[in-house]
Length: 263
Ligand code: MN3
Image 1 (cartoon, rainbow, N blue to C red):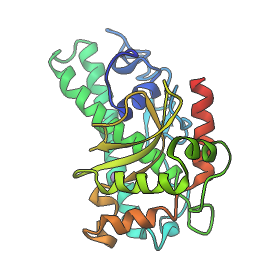
Image 2: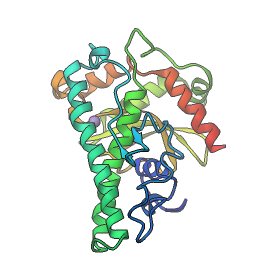
Image 3: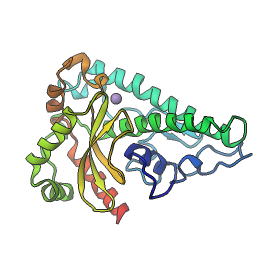
Image 4: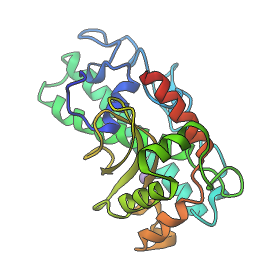
């Protein structure tokens, strides 16, 4: 994995999370099956190892706890949706990610056929993308009356004004991007490494069609599992409601962290 490789944003984050060793999995080599799966987790990711559920003792990811009660986002996101989303959907991506890492390790250790690399790499991209996306998603929302909604301040606010022409223009752009995602996917606010500018990008599934070289600092999950119980087919209503629970203080923190790291 190198800077010229056209990988999608989530996968870049995931691989970055693994120490930029990417699918070569830092710490692993042929015949090194007794060594830890991942020697340097989470370098380059905007979340801490704890927020990513990295368990150093186990050498694998575990489902990170929600930083609030499942009913905390009511009425914008209902408790049942939050619970299923976290304990079923996100949990399955964590399990799939760990399985993909083990699969790749077994190929490298010559315990499995080389053709499996393609399969496990796709599994890694999908499940790793899912895990990164959801870990970030939980961190960047907050209850409406307790840190959620409103407008950003500080550096991220200045950047939004400079790069989108104002907060309202950003909101319009972001909401449209979310509404227009074809099928299952995400809309992101991301910081683009080369230009230093904020971008709104769409992601399909967990990992496809997103901004290369851009690190997401906030995103909305528009898979139906994120809203269907409450909003049915009205994705637009969910997207509108989501604006009430964006944790701009946290997004501002991530913006500064990513910007500093990128400098
Ligand atoms: Mn989801």
